[in-house]
Amino acid sequence: MAKRKSFLLYLGLIVGLIISVFPFYWLLVMSTRTTAEIYSFPPKFWFGTHLIDNITRVLNNIDFFGAFLNTLFVALSITILVLFFDSLAGFTFAKFKFPGKKWLFVLLLATMMAPAQLSLVPSFVIMAKFGWVGTFKALIIPGMANAFGIFWIRQYAEDSVPSELLDAGRIDGCGFFRLYWNISLPILRPALSFLGAFTFIGAWNDYLWPLIILNDQSKFTLQVALSSLNGIYVSDYSMVIAGTLLAVVPLIILFLFISKQFISDIAAGAIKS
Amino acid sequence: MGEPLQKRTHLDPGSSMQLPERKRGLASEIWKHRKEYLAISPFYILFAIFGLFPIVFSMYLSFHKWDGIGEMTFNGLNNYQFMVTDPEFWKAVGNTLLIWVYSTIPMLFFALIVAFLLNATFVRFRTFFRIGYFLPNVTSLVAVAIVFSTLFSNNYGLLNYLFSLFGISPVEWLNKTWGIQLAVSMMVIWRWVGYNAIIYLAGLQSIPTVLYEAAKIDGASGVQSFFRITIPNLRPIILFTVITSTIGGMQIFTESQVLVGNDGGVSGGGLTIVLYLYREAFVNNYFGYGSAVGWGMFILIALFSIFNWRMVQGGGAKDE
Image 1 (cartoon, one colour):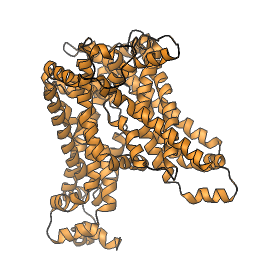
Image 2 (cartoon, rainbow over the protein chains, first blue to last red):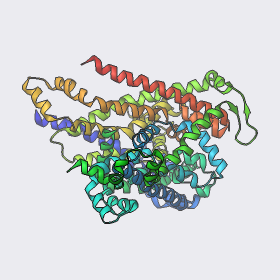
Image 3 (cartoon, one colour):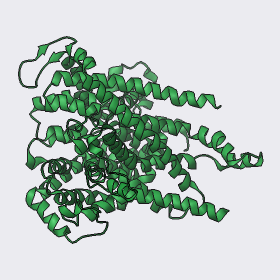
Image 4 (spheres, chains in turn purple, brown):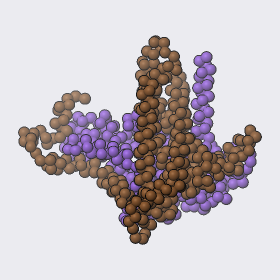
């Protein structure tokens, strides 16, 4: 009885896992095939020999490395700025008292409810007024601090940065910034690494806003480049597929390195809020 | 944890000296904490410029006719009037709601099952499974949409191949309203089951095992303890997932846009509200109208969220 139950349980888990992972396998198989093979019937379920060929065509037809570097630059800039501004604010909310603190924090939480799509058109108009349309500034600057991250860091700092340590720092003559930078930041590292990964993945995958803002191919991020590749090269589908593979792989590698802690933190974040 | 009283005075080194004077102006109090305000200010400044101002500005824009370049002309409620009488808008609303229903219900159901399976005490390789289930969630939507377009492709898609094995004639998925909606829903389900399962799993693990042991001693069956212990304890988390998937579901854009293009496919089955907004504002350059659609969408999301909240709360009250 118990054995049968555990068999069924594993069977369920494995079927689910196969469904989860299959599209990645399928992407990998397709990117080793020619377009004719992708459209063949019955489909090819095993790897072909055209991977290098397909990738070469991607690199020849679009500036893949350019798009890759653009994405890396935008995502890294957002991540670094978010880590700095959110941790500074989160730390301040957790460890200092000042007039209006409670209201400011409630206001901060309330901003999370503001719907992003509502401000899509006016945000674009503002960017046009600033002359930022088509630039990375329009992607980076609005996203360089966010309510979720401040909330996340505050929760962590409240429990983990001992006030006694800050007092000792003050006695040693640390100013506000050194209390933050030299004493608290090292303690906040676990919370920062989750916030950093979360922000980076989100920025890397962002599509709608870059699609609206970027109008010059040389500035395209990977998602925008990939989507335009998909729209243009209908007849050379194996190239589109190979481009998709190249765009997905870096993030998967990153994720596999951090996955264990990242997944626990996602769950913890949801339970807290 | 130590002495809280001492901690408080120490937090604010200036206060112990000035304490007798009691009456200090708010201004000087604020000035004294200028560093704290400076430290938290970036977020508020950014929000004022890129969050609050656009919301107010979009209200203003929604009463105007403007192509983004020429003169802006006031046209009162015309945009709103056009919106509520445009069949395309209501089609987009209907599509969005349908996709939400097709995706959310199976998604949360499967997530709950996965969470239960992973929570079984004897499961090995739990970390391995969790990573596998979570992997779809970090993958970009554009990539997901491209891969799924090959699964649902009209002629040679993998699904049609599977159908052919059972002698079912091929379906032109992407030419049919329901076919597109199914494909979009499948993407949502595939991408979010793992995420929600991880959250449910954390919820399950936070339920004290004593509760189950006590129930067992009282002679409760597995089914009884599921409905009497697990579900009530999980309710806040289920509510959280329903709300987040409502917000996410109302904003579906990339899946449709990459799969079937700006018009939502031949039949328009993939035209969601955000895709409609995007098309009107950024493809057709109706900036005023796009803003009005933004407000229409906001009101619909608010109403729908309240409705959902009531459903989950009310459904809970009944079986208690």
